[in-house]
Image (cartoon, rainbow, N blue to C red; front, top):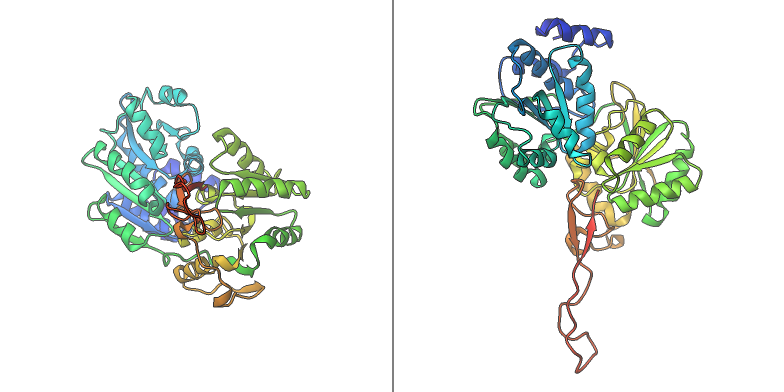
Length: 435
């Protein structure tokens, strides 16, 4: 398919596409749209920045327009689930222009925002509900919305949605939907285990894979700098000074680390902001707006933002900390080189992160070019602490999880070298909050 007009979409949808200068579908759109319009369950895999939102959004809107019926009070005809508030907002913003001017109604519900206005918004029912799982369950528990008439389900960023952090919510939500439904899953990465879990939610799905899982956009130039943890900020400042007028994203593992680095960059004279799990929804939206408008040149973030930022002008992505979930690296650097533009992804690797780097390279099937420094020798790599604590990152990269970190305490008994000492009360392991 080389033209959207060949896909059989409603004239209203084609007009909005034409008004925005979009005439040719991307590979994932060209293959997925006809299958969805034919009623098939779809599992779509494509690298970031290739138009997955419209791949499910356009056929979904087309099917809802053709049906003509209106939603009953407190119901939703279609449900789109996404793992983060930012991604929910991105999806809703992308689809709003296509919904505007039609009889269709769309609502978004996320945590971190007032629940009463969301309850009010759902009273009359909605055609499309875009939601995060946690807030949706809260609304269902309050009887503010029912899913018994929901005949379309979309899971965006399915790999993260189906990971352990969300599988319990999905198992609670899916049985509440209409038995006769069409399900679509879209993501940039999906390993074998997640694909098996996903199969439990689909019926005879067609798998559409337009790129190798873990592959990033061809226009992303990647490089690695081997640098000790203590000198990362100095190296970061050196590099961003060379592109002070271009938008840059800086990723860290923890929200405390992200906030600290943002303040350090601001003190050094850079225009920087931060988004992470400790920020309110309003704060995150205002910061993203300032970054999108170019008022802020640097956005420091945790992985909570990796899948929810669609800003074509981002030219540089810096991995200040390497993620301990290799697939998260793919999502992070997918925030640049979007919509056919070019971008650069720069990673910093300390000695204790070498195993994370090798895991990332294995997933992508490449060796990232070395720009400076040298890879540590085996004897120079410190042994990892138990519990994946290490640098205070931890977690599986879900925004909001907790990881227990061993504190190096001896278990119970008398400390070495002491006699007749009273037994010491065992200390609780410290908890480190990620993203």
